[in-house]
Length: 403
Ligand code: GLA
Image 1 (tube, rainbow, N blue to C red):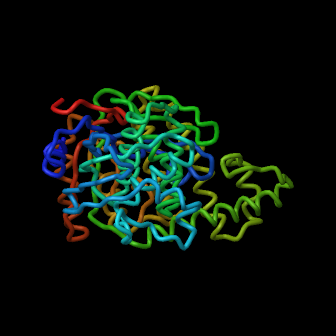
Image 2 (image 1 turned 90 degrees about the vertical axis):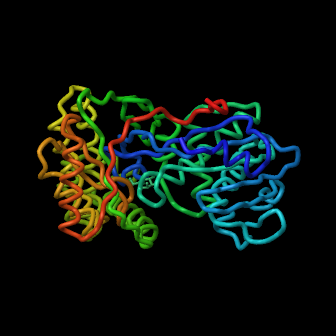
């Protein structure tokens, strides 16, 4: 853990009441399907956002973020004026009427979403640190949202079912921060289970933990690449999925078709020629990824790691060729990993356009894998990857200071 307690004491000259840990995640399979009502298979990881906090007497939220060497404060009453903050002209303001720093939009957005849901949100003093690399596709922002939601839940005297809390965090990100995202990241940060992946049906919100077989390690490799276009490309992909859906409704004579997740691979093959070729490629990824993810969960349960890994490799190829959200560096990482002995599967994880790959590796060879992958990546790209073995971790929890 980072010294979030020390950061709190330094900022507020007092001990915190409690500490929240909210993890980042990797996604093993089910990429770019959560916003198509599909199935995802993420795991929370042992990298997390940490929040040390105590209730404040005034309805003001005061924040210290030593990682960013920044502090910020905002008034809870300011938030209620904003109906649809991301869409409106209303600037997000701090406690003295200046523009609120962007990193503080996440807690402000969570407070906004909780209050609009009729929940009690108290003033807060809080220090925030994180070991989730930012913008790397490991859900650093969802971890921050969930940490604050858990803090306000603890202090507010209310308790929501986990999926409802995840949805409110997602709403904060979509409607207050103004970034489109599905539910996967917040779900994983809240519902994570040590040693397990989590299979979520993004329509029904039913989910089950799926044990990770013994002797298998999750290795994350950060390409070091961050691309600004990721956000706009994400929105474009979502729009293309909607266009595909409309086209399939017509071609299949089924106006009630709700989402791409409702299209079987067989039906898709039959009707895809009716779609624009680019849109058809996007939709093919989604339809096949839904089938892959459901099959993969069964394989994992059965301990068939090699077969599971083969589906991860297929997923990477599909993200590269059909969905076109990969990049040279991620391809270099995935392809090098797939050639290394002891690696069952390797693919980009998260939205793409940079960030990380996730690798399933025989635990006994994980150290060799790390060394070989690092060397191969440097040879291919001249870049240095940060590579580490992850543990699948529990979801967000409130801890006692000093614990
Ligand atoms: C981002 C979003 C998620 C999901 C992934 C792609 O991480 O926040 O909701 O859409 O991209 O699978």
